[in-house]
View 1: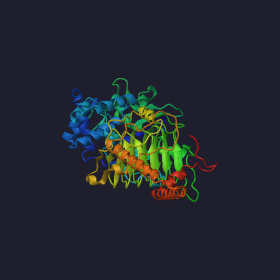
View 2 (view 1 turned 60 degrees about the horizontal axis):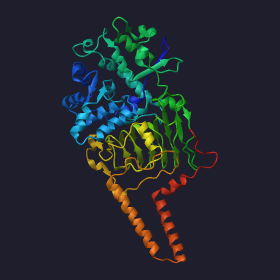
View 3 (view 1 turned 90 degrees about the horizontal axis):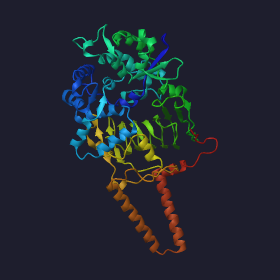
View 4 (view 1 turned 30 degrees about the horizontal axis):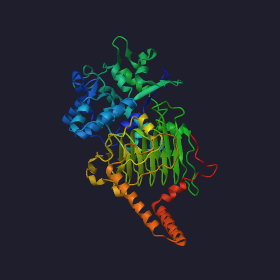
Length: 542
């Protein structure tokens, strides 16, 4: 801790939901980022700075960096998802897109949407760092590749500290740079640049509870000498600002590590008899302010866990190493990461920003989400409603996409709170991001003959009584045909005029076949797990 008592830390959210879990294009290097930074500043009158329009970014990304248009829009869209907007503004944008009848109309609307220039592009400019001391990380927080470091707050801090000089240099105005686009000992940083850096860093005074963005602390009168701010120039000394940041940076008190170490333990799951695995669920929602809430869940095994709780509302949720379970989290969520899970079903409330799966096998996910991305999955099924194209990253096999097919009473209310609408819905138009997966055979759309609706087996208060937005006509038709077959079968049985003994014998035969089907499909386990556990091991409220 430095003498001023200021504590700074790297914010988790830009890394959890703002860093795409895929190696960046080769031209996203520091050299090109410097050129982009200079380019937009010299075109402030051309919709490039201080706010960057889609048309300008498209010109830079497609014309100069040689990115495909879809990939250029993907990065812009991810940046936009982190912008502070109300749910009403998000819903208005969805309505505008849903009314477009052509790609040209969509492009026109995109050109009218603007996004703040910030350090967001810098987040994807370098490979994630490797922790210097792996022994300090538990299995839950240890990361072995760039795919898994988004939740590791040690990696967040390491990344920013290792690249702090470059980050600050990118924020300098052109006149503060040498001919080779480098800083000098006399370079000055503008107030606007420090405000931009607040996207990554925030802090507080020691022993104080209120959290401040970086620029408010840097501009605080007693800190002017240390932060390097001059009242005369209204700017910061680059040398002093960097030294103050390095001296003040500490661990994130609301990060994953703090949540696991000192967070509130939740008794939502019970111990399954005969197993050594013990579920671990922790949260920081009792101490963390909004936008910093986190719930981490690990090793839920062979059970049904169902929650609709204030603890989950607006939280970043990580689900890790769960196996043979059915997990229902029926609250509006900020983001969700599902990692290293097997043979399980996850039914989620609306996910406001991003839903990501990594290294999962035979998992079914049912959710409304702003963005879905998957990496290193095998045999997974996604029943989703999403206003963006699902992202297929590296290492996936046998992926199935299907329409969202369930509802619960509070669903539409939760969708409104997260700014998610029923249209547009791109569940059936995934985007393959990694070159190794350019073959579209990596995924399929669920055939209508295999489609069934999903019933959430819990009673709740609320007004939603049907699947939001309905079903695509081809799937609705398949359900109708199946219902028609059932009616024909019932009519056939009725007209068979069976005797009392025959009816009883027939009923036993049907029940045996049904039981056999429950066992073979695994549905028997799901039904059994709906029975409340014995007293003393009930799932706790919270």
